[in-house]
Length: 291
Image: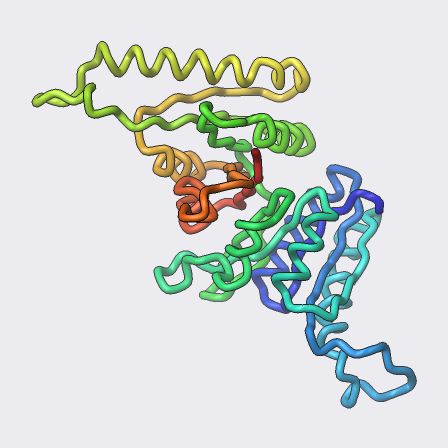
């Protein structure tokens, strides 16, 4: 199968915003864009029947309408529609395994709505074999609208003590395709032994910062050499990694965070940094699985 970017469509403005983002990305990477709609009640394609009795009418309309809109905006882009007779979670997970990335829409930032399509997107993010990008819809007069083309840096939130190559590869490829700078950030909470009654022991925090900066520079070195055209900034902050990721996302065009493929049975399927990012970051968030 040729390389594709898949976007999940459900007819909502949020999924249309995701489709526009995915189309921009597919065009830049010279990939095919696949528009996927899962409908468990899909029936074999009927022939010569009016639309009012076609059980597949609305499923087809969701895909065809988006396809026409995206093709008009990106005339040189290969866009294919895909209707699947399956539930959304299974269909999206299967599609993710065949794609360079899976792109999904997201809800707004109100407390009740701050979860990305909760019952579908988070299980997909937690189990997908490939990166999943979650895209918010901009709002106009209270109604979601497709987001404009993103600006700002690609921010990659790194832990350093775990494998970071998958995150850095995704971040650098995206930054190069979009001609955007890359900002590698690492947050590290101040340890208890560095705290003193009047604040923190600056000798200890300086040592921690220098050590983290050294490891961050080492992690970035081969990727700087591989992508010499990408402007790179590295940042170390002594603060909660989740808070650092969300704060850095405020001016980002894309936030890249990681998710371990194999976690202990009792541990959450998505770590604290990814949880904070997908619930609170305003920019698109890429969750990249890694070993």
